[in-house]
Each structure stands twice: as C-alpha cells, then as structure tokens.
Image (cartoon, rainbow, N blue to C red; front, side):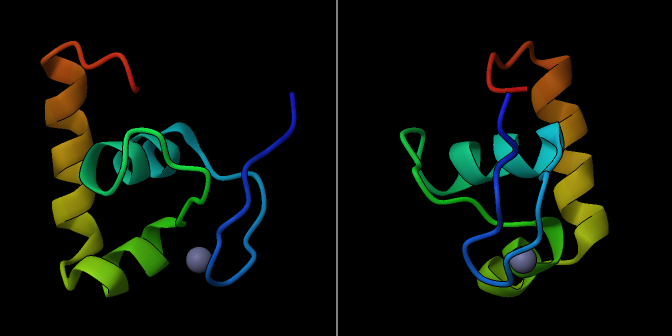
Length: 65
Ligand SMILES: [Zn+2]
C-alpha cells in the first residue's frame, strides 16, 4: 500500500487523519493531499481544531476515516 505524500511540503506517509481531512474538507475525490501542518496553513486553523474535527467525523461514522 503506497503512502500518500503532502502536495505542499512533500511529507511522506500521511496518516489517516491527514488523508481523511483533505478529502472531507477540500475534495472528496482529491488526488492531492495535505499533511496536517500544510492543511492548517491552507485553511488558516490550528492543528488542534483539525484533529478535533477528525475525531468528530469519526464519531459520526464518516467512511473517509
Ligand atoms: Zn505538508
């Protein structure tokens, strides 16, 4: 299983939160992915906020996570 790479900084092996958040917040059919810190910068929010959202999506049973 090939790891996803951050489109912005090139960070490898993005985790499930980073992949799920990219899809959920940007584009469900995303071919490009962002790591957590680049996603924060892109959306202008804190990492804590994004991780909180990821937990919420999981709690809702979102299939992207
Ligand atoms: Zn990055």
